Image (cartoon, rainbow, N blue to C red; front, side, top):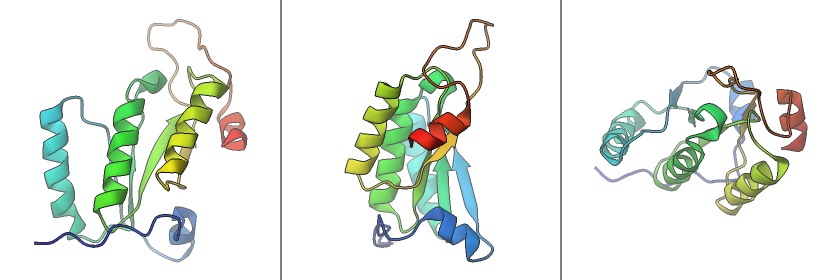
Length: 141
């Protein structure tokens, strides 16, 4: 079965979808292995038949899955008829790191970002980074 045309990046904002009425969405965590990624990609094709309004991709603690989140979101936006929104956390990130990632997202036409505070380190160590609260990240984005 041929894939639907890619989501017209830059045309529809998720906040507009949410404001227009009921939506269906799915949230994924970035797979830790290449095999798991291939499995998710197959499942995305099956889920496309359910016509989700959008999907979101989580972000590992301290940005540990930053690259996988980015790559997965870019791939979904390029290969599916529904938009993908990356999660982005402020925990453990400098302004320069977040700026670099936002530039990458913009280069791929990704305009929907879910900005979150993120989880504190589980080992009790102090949170590092330039953002203390999610609102600071939201304003920066």
